[in-house]
Amino acid sequence: MHRTRFASLLSRATARQAMIQQQQGWMTPIARPMVVQRSLASLTNEQRPPAVRVSKHPESPEVAVMTLSQSAFSHDTARLMIKEWRAMEQDQSVRAVILKSDLKSIFCAGIDFSEFMKGPESFGNYWRSIREVFDVIYSSRLNTAAAMHGHSLGLGCVLGMACQDRFMVGNTPKPATIGLNEVAVGVPVPHWLVELFTQITSRRHAERLLPLGRILSVQEAVQTGLVDKADFSSQQEMDEFVVRYLVGRNKAPRVAQAETMRVIRLNFLNFFRESEEEDVATIVKYVQEEEAQSVLKAQIARLADKSKR
Image 1: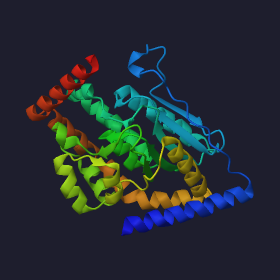
Image 2: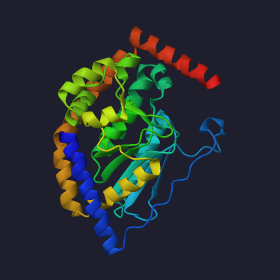
Image 3: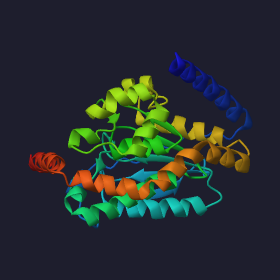
């Protein structure tokens, strides 16, 4: 009932916003995003796009677009994303950001499994960078929305949860999924992620889903509250909606809006930051367990076999 009401209010607000925009004469068509035709795996290092890149939307330059071009999140990708986000944060002409990807059927497939196998010190440093990626998004002064056109697993789900709003299109070119699947690969869900998932959905949903490593269909994600809206027929339709939605949010007074969001998120952010050392020690411990290493090695072997086909 709550989600249906939210969707109805969101739909009516969007309609009113579009009407006002048309009357004021500043709503313009949004260009279709460029599609990379070749598989990224077939490109050389010189030909591959950066793992993370940022641009301003051509028709609404107060909205930045951060695009991911790497399905598995490596340590280098994490460092680059932190650098790009901080640079974007310093640009006072930017009020909002869309986080998306240009990968076919994937928003983000999660952590690069090879990072798990590099030893405790290396993985500990990597996990600190992952936490920093989350921190810069979650604590941002910007209005943030994740536009997820495909699978959003593990870290992909975390990136979405760091944003203020989450939108998905899951039926093109094939049904998408989303969720925290850490348990499925032999690693417990970190305390802060459990708390965040509980805040966004409910404690009962957390109890039923997280201990099983369950991933959800787009429709299930909307029903649980993990995703706000998903009734889009294409990625282009979703991207256009999200830009309009963010432009509407940007109409609120800048300082008052940012301070209010800071206060809303302050308690969780304090808990997240204060528990860093315990979190890093815990995740490193469990990643080194025989059970987790066995599952992870099996997953790496499966992916290597799949890439040969």
